[in-house]
Image (cartoon, rainbow, N blue to C red; front, side, top):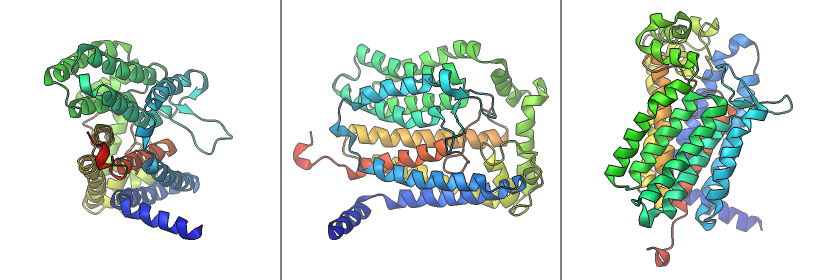
Length: 375
């Protein structure tokens, strides 16, 4: 029995994308060091402990996701699509507000860590949307197929935003949807029509947004519109400027250690990195993250089926845009909309989501279709 287990482990290690997992672990270790440093002023190791547990759970999620050949369960995506919508809507009954004021969390005293349905729902959406496209692949450009895919997206992102009011997470769903739709091979007329439709919906979304959300967007171009909502980005840029080339050193950043920088261990951890490890530290961190995203897109080309290909693309798109928005937020060129930096920011739901998502990328290359069954 032990011999067979060892053979199975060796077989798994031979097939798995250990480079992708290694890059994720290296980046998470970098983030763990930053979380340790940024929370020194709190006088507790609670954040480091929780993040370590989340990373360990994330590795477990990676292994399970990489082994799961979801194509064996062709109807599972329908069940998970319904579950995802109900999961997001559960915030109406069980949700609590976080630091950003959004009702995005499920958090009770008996829980080891808070759960953010919007974060976890991203990987569920990538799977269900890839599966839906795969089902419709023979008639993808039929008007009813395009309508189905659009409704799939609209119902999911609507359930995310209506209760939680989490604009940041909702925007990532939009980018995932657009990139996966483009990669599906859909006729460009339909794609650009959908893109124009999404743009046409912008005034409606603006009307639905709360006043503070509008101000967070406006202050990017006009900081004088609200000193309150321009404050976080201004302090972030000050922290980055303080760091210079090599930084003040771990535990020595004035903005970080005096807790002037908001959410210094989570949404603004990139600014914390800039102050304490400088421009060089930020470049190293961005290189790690870029390598992970590039690996996801590279793995998409290794998949021999549409569903696996689209899941790799969806995961890569999710991480790419979240990195761009988070870093842009810290640089003052994007609105402060409460998005974590993948594998780096403190947050159990975020860590678990990203590790599980790269597990599905790994699975797309491991679980290939036997040649005799390929179409």
